[in-house]
Length: 180
Image (cartoon, rainbow, N blue to C red; front, side):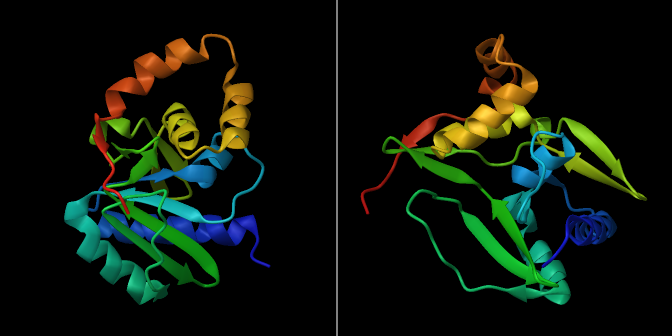
């Protein structure tokens, strides 16, 4: 079984390669929540990138591991989703991240303004998205356990106000989902 330190070491190596290639990105999902001390473990590494960097990121991560075959899920309309296995660790890469919620496609693409912190990790700096932003993403994904964990960690009081001021500007307008 892969331990947390091995996953963190892989993240540092990915961050180093992205820095060498001047790729803008952000860490999201459970690993970001782990670094913010909201969860005690995480399964994979979720990387948010810009559509313009898809080919370069695919090349970098393909050198490090194996690109898995596409496995689209109806709940998402992400423009480019790539899943890699690197040294037994799952690395999910999302460009143009989009969630289908109540029949609408909500564009959750990475925006520069969403990078709210640079986490020093060894000799690397890891760009983090906000736990409040991911609280909203988890709400849209209908994952109430994650929403509740973030609420508890950040304090339930004024959570809605915080979300309106921090998250709302980051969520573009909804568009109708095309029938499947």
